[in-house]
Length: 268
Image (tube, rainbow, N blue to C red):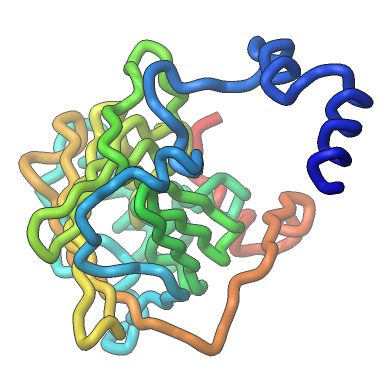
């Protein structure tokens, strides 16, 4: 009976699913030469068992100091060029208790790395081919591919605020490399800009029987600072909460004095 019903449905539609996909091939994005992370065939491939599973809800650990969400903790690198001037301006205004380059307050995406330390829970779902992250801060989205793919061709990739992330395992550490970040009004801490040469590596571990997530961030940008900018953050597993839908509405933010003042220094 079930098979007959499927046959009737197929006849009613007039074409198979494959035929209809073929008609839409100019509209449907397609990877050339490899499967999507959620393709059943990709998920079923034999792979070594992952050393740990990040699935859960996490909250950045600010128990020592609220200011630890900043990546200047424990220290900043030696800035150069325009980044040096912008950093100094941000520090000057901070001493005057003034906001500088608050792009996030104007509804621009937080972007990497700032998305990770927003003071909101972040949900993570790990499957064999990828890790999906959704922050409760404006529902910022990340995906880390674990299926062995290479980066998108730099001539065709679309730069985004969270970039393209590819991970691999080194023992009990997940190593994630991210590039292709959008630079427009994308800042770190107090208005520090990034260039298209910005790269970030995350070395991720689970500690305390899976209760603590630790990420060592190693950031480079030869146009912005010398050498590596390193900062290690921790998150706490929080099992009695979920994330919800959150939208940033510019018309509401425009009525807040703090976000109004934060427009100083933004790119037009």
